[in-house]
Length: 519
Length: 98
Image (cartoon, rainbow over all chains, first blue to last red; front, side):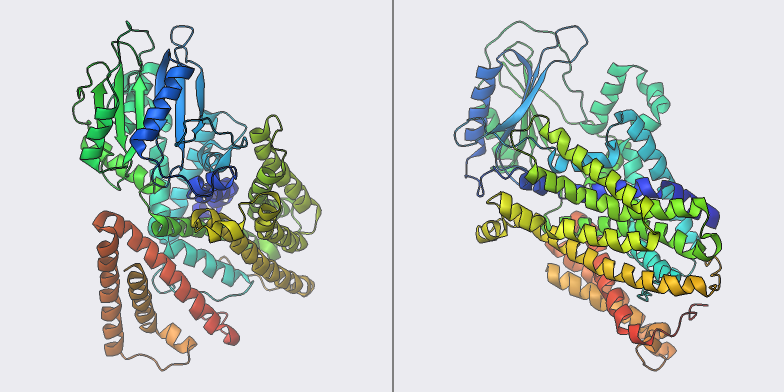
């Protein structure tokens, strides 16, 4: 049991750290998205959703009248202060997929707005299950394998930590292996419900990749059948995926449909409007509610695009789907308001800290026995490169967003390249320096990388803390302030690392007593 | 209501920690009698339940239950840090666990 916890945790720990760190940042995805597009208005104009959608529809009709799909999300809620569009063309060949266009419109004027090209918070969030530079399916398998190991590590962790309740509040600060064991246990136990939920639901999320044969047994093999399954799983009804052009027909007016949605869900509560095969006899208008729920579906209305009458019946929601949807909704936490989102963020940080402290604990326990061995040094250096190096790389991603020239081609891709280049440099640094020094130096670098972000922001944009706080835009200020707080956290970590380093030097010369495996 | 939920939960964890002799010793207090321990545990349990109620008042039961877990983790985290640093100067008990 202990063996599985230790070794299963070790070999997957570095990837899990990446997954937890980027996933935790993902809870602030929308706020990061906004921060990374400083061209967005500081205070969004107040525009009624129906008016904005009318402008969006006009834009879609004039740009690509013959599209297969127009998807418009009006301003409203946390998600965006502007109108977003996504347009998909008819495919040129049968069975292919059409060209896709997406962007932002000013909700007051309907003009296209130009923001800098950036991956935004969304890219960071996506990395936690798609990784980067590798195909999605491969990433899903890697992340899935690690998540399974995580789940096993959690369960075995609970079992081997038999004194779970007696040690509930026990944390003795310090740098010895006991102290790291305390820290590992405390962050693990205090947020255990979150850790179990997030790991299990994460596996559930991509079950159609991992358990493909089970699904194929019900739905059949092939892309179409897989899509039919994902539609039912995520939407509760089959989406119109028909890519054939139907006969042209005049469209029903959108306004009464929006009025109906307003009447049912309250004003300003439209999430998005999805029109498939517009301007044809097969046109369908799907309107989805803005509010998200913990359990239960967002309400959906489907209208016939020609007659304007409601066509679709209720969403199919058998109990297994209801359960999996609830777990997925708990995982994403999209229903959370600001306070609850901070709690999610905190729980995510505790998960990240649990993995990081577990990795460090492995080396703390074995230093006396294994120091000098190749494997030991590899683990130690990978730990530095992951815990400090990756954190610094995430900060570098934000730096790149501010410092790369706005007009640069391939800018969004380069933001991510900068992130991974910095990570590579940090890994090289970790490999070349003595491990104890690498810890304190990299904590210092990470502290500077995060702590200076508000300054870099102030020097490169006028969306700095002075402006955002004065305008009461706390979601924007929160990004700067969180970076500052993380920077201060790394200053503290650097001091702890320096202390550990000083202690490690004499300890090595006086042949230390071997700490037995406490677990 | 959110602040109340947080403080109820913090008070609950404090009562539960004070019911444990290890933490009483770290704070330099006398051992708790078994009667005291039972009372503190009951108080702690009730306060946790009250905290759940406060969360449900603010968020409704479905979101409130999710938030309760977060509130419990955050408040317990602060208590753990407080207890840890309170007892730091007397860090003699390295093998106290055994």
